[in-house]
Length: 93
Image 1: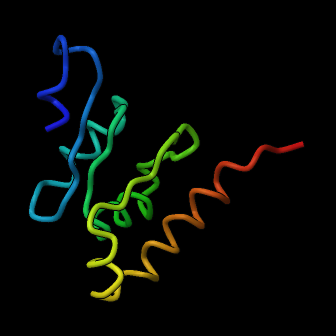
Image 2: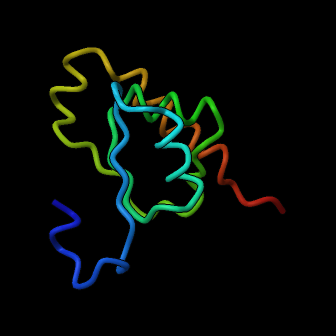
């Protein structure tokens, strides 16, 4: 969907990360840099644990179907994501 909004191919980079897709390919794309990251909680956590994600430039964090995620027991994962984003991006005095 985000790719459909582009005026030209190089306007911004979008990456979807989810299970069942080769981790190496996703890691390679992450290292090149992305402007929009869309992912499942589990795969985002996998990339975080491997040190593949840097959230310091994040301007927005959107949870699609958050009510469903929370009802299915993903609250702890969402809390962990937000905590890591906050801790890793603190400005040092």
